[in-house]
Image 1 (cartoon, rainbow, N blue to C red):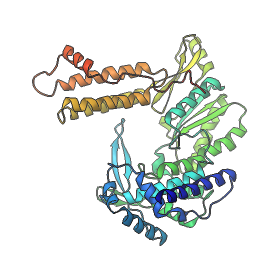
Image 2: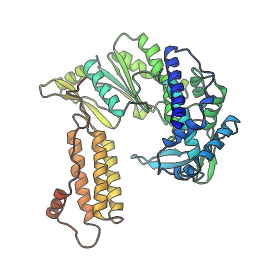
Image 3: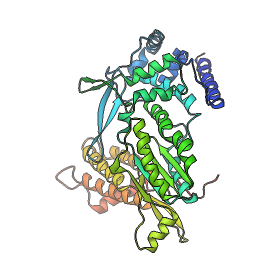
Image 4: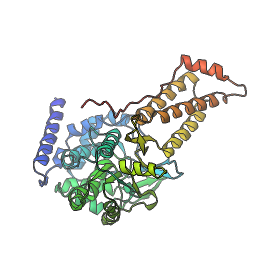
Length: 443
């Protein structure tokens, strides 16, 4: 019975998607009716278990104990427009530069409604989103964005790269502007009011309540799709419809969430774009971080000229990789990439802290398996063509750190290097491997 009802909601979402795709000017007047008990139960089942609870302290497991009752109550309040999201619990995660990244943890009930809203918004706006945006979109990943960047620089007429950084994007999204963006496609007052309530729900930090006049809380299920809608109108669509139409040379933008790179053929157009972008971001209440932004000479010609002049070509960072001009075995230009120094140091510092802490908490055989999983996760992300040396370096340094902390568990040394090497032989860790090849890909 439930499956039929769930598929009924999915059918409606598919119909909405088809209508949105078929008519780019269509504005949807009635969407809130989709928030039914069965749809919300389906959304609940997609929530990750074991996550930290929000300000009410209710976990996913506890909410599930009286699921039917809880969902029926939630739907009643949604229909009567009495549902109000609880403030988001704010915690901080340390950043490699010493700063802290704020993370919002919504209550379980709010996560369910956010999941439902996300699905509704995606069914409409996914039809509008441009191919050059990759972040937080179905069936797209960081590696897809990196592969696309490789294709652009290798095959396009690229001589300049504009690397711009939006300062504290998630904290500075203008609510009024965001609602204007949503109204390009949605004119259902009930649904818009619900999204508005999430934006204004506030933050609880160390027992104190703070109002949210701008921004979308990082960590929320709804935040990524709202960010994509905002940047679709603020950046992607503007670049395609306005910027590109005025250019004489080749240009291509690639964006993952609020991280983006723009490749240009002509220097004058690359430099002019930087000024235009600052103005455009200002219109949407956003600012460009000057210390993290630059326009550099980059590409086949720039690499050849730099080599001729006896200097190194400039580099840029994107999605945890430093991109540089490289030479293939046949002596031809290729785009090189390696784990960025900043990310490498950050990952090593995190690994050092983790090994120091875990070594006395659980037995070696238990944490050794966890270490293997951590290494595998690193290799699966950074294992891209051309980056094998960085992976090998990471592996060797982690092994040395593990040896160091194993020998600091007591006053007496646990292992000498020969014994430790024998231990690794019988308890091997995952070896560096390329998981994302840019070559010999079957189309």
